[in-house]
Amino acid sequence: MSGMAGGLSESDMKNIAAFYSSLKAKPGFAKNSDTVALGEKIYRGGIADRSVPACAGCHSPNGAGIPAQYPRLAGQHADYTLAQLTAFRGGVRKNSAQMTGVAAKMNDLEIKAVADYIAGLR
Image 1 (cartoon, rainbow, N blue to C red):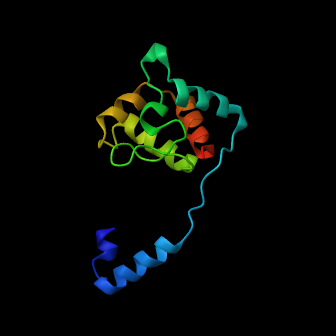
Image 2 (cartoon, rainbow, N blue to C red):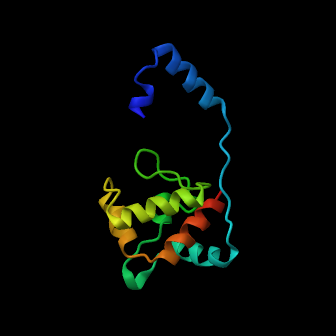
């Protein structure tokens, strides 16, 4: 991003920021009804036999997160959440040891199910 923004003036940056802040976010939605129930089960209760904690424990039951500690997840597009959890699991994304550990214990179906469930949270 810095390569793209490097040539912008401070006025340009303020105008771009004002434009994007005026847009309404379009939340994602659950697309696969076959996996939503599994996603909800994991989000709310975790996977006890593999020590996967409930997502709701940190990100809150409604996905609002805890500001400055855990990000909001509710309405996040499933493809994005899927990509991030996969990156944590694969060691590509390394900024959260906690999430790397959680994702490492989840299989593809579980990650997809949680991502889809999160997209439908409001």
